[in-house]
Length: 270
Image 1 (cartoon, rainbow, N blue to C red):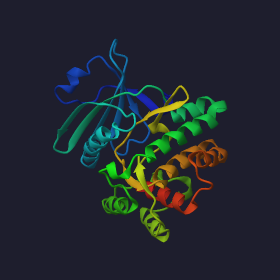
Image 2 (spheres, rainbow, N blue to C red):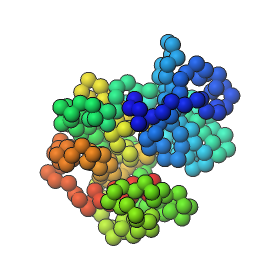
Image 3 (cartoon, helix red, strand yellow):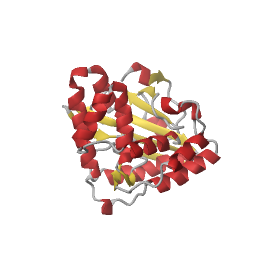
Image 4 (cartoon, helix red, strand yellow):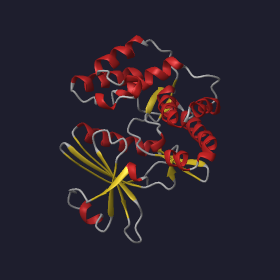
């Protein structure tokens, strides 16, 4: 893993049973996209597989419980981590999962510039595969109406990190983002099964193909731009040409800028 994306740490407090099962592992804490919780990579125990542990309290604990349900459903369609152990007590939860093989799409883009176009092609192929899952088979709703209601609750509870907004909205308040979202409505619906946080750090690549995804807590039926916008935004770090290539490889003649803007603004509130 990239040193600026995780750091070595001591084992955190673990509930009985889990502490014994994980004895002998080395611990590293993920520094990317924790969303109020903690994510740890467990490695270095001879003869034992690499694992990941998510831990959270209160609303994060609730989100972890939601993720388990979604992981088990999504596993019928595409590769995702397997749930190894789950412990929940009032206001707190721990989720232990298998690590998926490969490297993140971010690592692949960062370390092998000559392969960037091929990586984007692989990402687009995997996204088309995800979006081809029949909507009728998905029991989860994540459309913008549902997420706007959740965003309003987060704003009212003071849970939005305004210091973490993208550069385009630096200095904005959560209320300004909220108003900006409503200025872009209505949007023509285009529902598919979405991942919900289709970022470069949540996609694993091996042998030139995407071999799975992680962080499935937002999986549900939503507009396809829920996923396209986040991935498009991530690729901006590597240049506009890759953003354009994503849209072409996915099968769109040009990007819907209104939907891109809406879904990126919506993501600021989570």
